[in-house]
Amino acid sequence: MWVSHIALTDFRSYGKASLELPSGPSVLVGPNGQGKTNLVEAIGYVATLSSHRVSSDAALIRQGREAALIQVAAKVDSRPISVEVTLNRTGANQARVNKNRVPRIREALGNIRCVVFAPEDLRLVRGDPSERRRFLDELMVQVAPRYAGLRLDYERVLKQRNALLRSSAGRGSDAISASLAAWDEQLIAAGTELMLGRLNALRWLAPALKTAYQQISPIPAELTAEYRSSTGETQDLRNSEDVAAALRVALLAQRSAELARGVTLVGPHRDDLEISLDGTLAKGFASHGESWSICLALRMASFSVITEITQDHPILVLDDVFAELDSQRRERLAHSVSSADQVLITAAVAADIPTGLGGQRFEVAKSAGETHISAGK
Image (cartoon, rainbow, N blue to C red; front, top):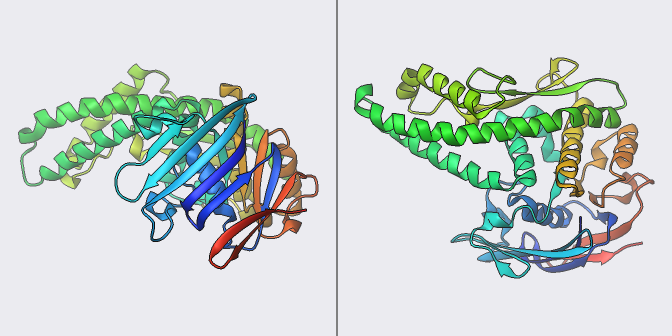
């Protein structure tokens, strides 16, 4: 898979932009703040319906505009496909696939697949559990887009259950027991499917993760990841019956605490992905170089998993990462991405790019308040 053309209207710093892209490596070069990341962010958004930089879509719409448009044309095994996404400041976002509008925007998922590695990925090691949950969920959705709807279902049930718990303050538990039991069953049903999806994704990811780390890091070590469930169970959960039973038992055990605090304390929204290097928890212990290698390995393992399951290489984005790597890790990364159908790289200076990565160069610069892209040497 590779993107052959991208056009932007009122997206981030771009009033209008249109760019033809080749397969293989392409490097976007320009000083920071010129709009390089905005371009690859748009491709990543079409693939995942989320930004790797911000949580709110409003930040993606150009200041003073009411909507932004991303248009992507791609080739999948020489078969053309187009995806358009309209981001609206008010009202729902919309999407078209091959010029046909889809009823729900999430139905555009799965047409473009993309793995993005960016400096923000250090949060996968150093950040909150929500960052690691999001990583697993995005991998799961790119492999099986139906999980996007399941995540929304779970979030809806969780919101309603939390509202009921908050409203129970000062009331006896018997007064809400029937209503809470009904929401328990809905939470268990959606939560079971979501947890199983994550666990299955992790079973694919685990062996690829070890291989990717060995390819990227100059220092031999074993990288492992383990799912930590709020139920207290971990890798022993292998089927829907086991997961549902574990959730049910944990919810009953936490009933008093939930009523006291007015919040749901059990479920996939409280889980974590525990990442360890040679048996030591990475968060709080991994060095700067180790943290970069771990994050790179997580993304490259995702690339391998998506490729293996879908039988198609996703687009690979390396957003301003080579400047942060030492020379050994630069060369190892360049070698490990050589099999990708398309690699999009951003860099402040061309000297940051390993010499082994050829391909097309593009210069990105601002002039008179507009961002311009031109083919370089």
